[in-house]
Length: 442
Image (cartoon, rainbow, N blue to C red; front, side, top):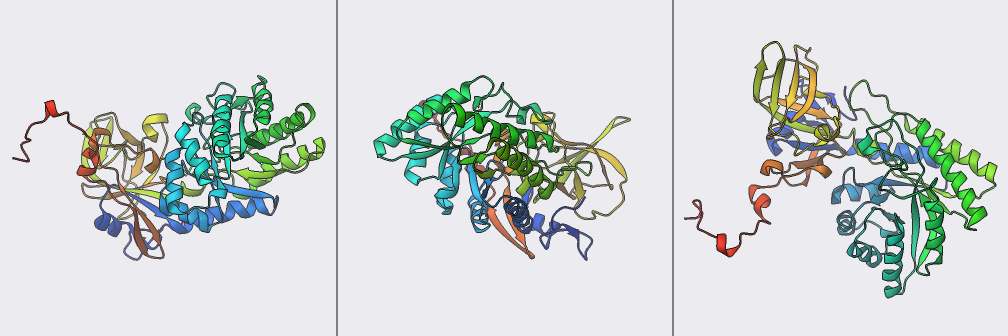
């Protein structure tokens, strides 16, 4: 399975963005996150075009929790995207990158006062309120500054899509938003409208992530428009903006069949148009928040093979120099991946192996992967690691987090430096009573 600009070059090696994968591993070391810039830009343009031709009053927001650093923020700005941010840390990154604040929507189910202060100081376009406590806190902070902050209200539509329970977020039993069926959403919106330093402009929902079918997306769109009509009739508010979240799936393996941008847009927008006409509502500005769908398939992680262990009659373990510290998704919710032998990706499969990490856990990245015979020192390329790997990486077992390079037209540029061992201990503090001269310092 080749994705994006991947191909086999004249040397017979895997090439990404015109760069030889083995050369990347030699120059930058492994594990290494490789981000294919052309694929990221192509995904942005395809999603924007699919929506804008069907619904001109729309804005595509990149869900930065999938992958955020300052270089990615710059690419999203150049592609005319907005940003869906989930924390003060993500907001600070966007600020330092010079991203236009009017295209930022700040989310989060438990925003701290400092995060809301930062949002107000920066002048973010919208704050998406998750609960009544946030309404009161944001209103007080905005009043202190003498400003009125435009807000959306996050609601839970009561839809449970076909995806892993850990990334299903739109059902009633969720920490996110106010439930429609429980009446909490209507009461919350009515309260927000009474707060003088909040301007309620719209609604938001997000039903989950890595969803392959379209039915859930269309159902959510229809339900949200019906709820907007109900609010018009009961509370007297006309919704100006409708943010339907993201969550469309990507290809992790050859068996995955995610919907195309065209089919995705058609299903959602058909539902919006039909329900708006039935309710005789004005068409709201429509927002979407794809994250994984933009960067997922654009990412590849390169590893170097180390120990190979046979359990006779049961399994062959091929261990690599990373694992759950640079990609926790298999350990968290049994995420599936595919991989190629970067030195000869077209070689026929010779064995079925399990790709194991090197952490002190049952740290297996890929079970039952068909590969050509590999040896210690070979480079493996794990596909579709451009979302929720770097952003979820850790220093478990005191591993250093990998570098990330941006590749395009045969050029590779460092956009995240590899951590050093000194970086890992840089925030350790030893109380004076425990201090002693260490063996390495003399």
